[in-house]
Image (tube, rainbow, N blue to C red; front, top):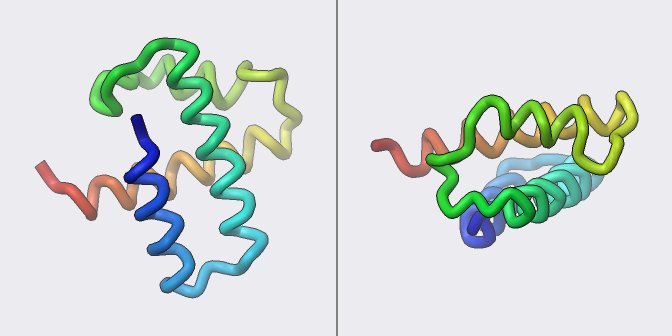
Length: 88
């Protein structure tokens, strides 16, 4: 579902000067988010609720506190990008 948007976002990060480690972290966490969305059968990003985001960050695959922080940052970045890239 998010494949095209994530790829566009990662390309944006590369040309915007994000460090390689940041891009690696974003890619890893956004791929995990795609897996999570598949598991909950979310068909549209517009159908994702705060509860879904909370479940992903706090519970999906028993993340460490550092992973939780990285997930919050990745979600914040991608949703900010999506809001700017495709305003409704």
